[in-house]
Length: 192
Image 1: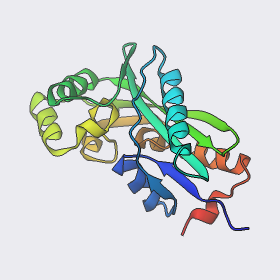
Image 2: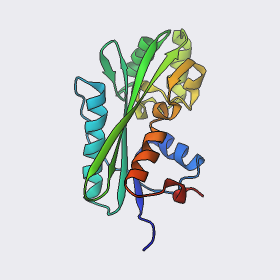
Image 3: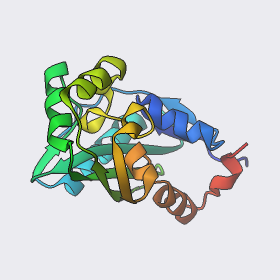
Image 4: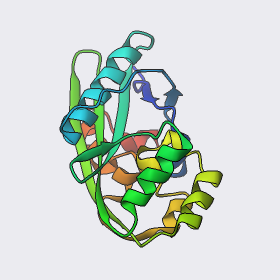
């Protein structure tokens, strides 16, 4: 019997690009699943990861990895902005301050769903209105929690990160490796 197929459910080009840059050769699928926002950011990312994995299990057989990321500041969960103005507002809120990024991960094995999450803290330097608008004009802000992606132009905004960089990218990598191994799958076999 060969190695099981691992499907990564994501519509995020950033997640896929990051995994492919590391050499992972998974199957990628995109599905539309409404995202739920609860009061707690950790519960939110875990719930959305589970919902995505259940939807994907209806259309594919194999191991399914799903992720969900939110930005959290001042007791408020920032998901993906729905408009340019909302993206600008989010970036203004993050300017000159630290915020938490949570990324949930779910591994659907066909029999059960294992979940975990990564947490990181990101500090932005003080941002001017002009550079926020510059960023929003050049990035696909609507694809990313908080209106930014750390591996994109927003890297110009970051003063420092505490925690796992890949959690901010949207893939808690160490958690993913551990979960796959716990399920009996060797992740290194998927790297070319």
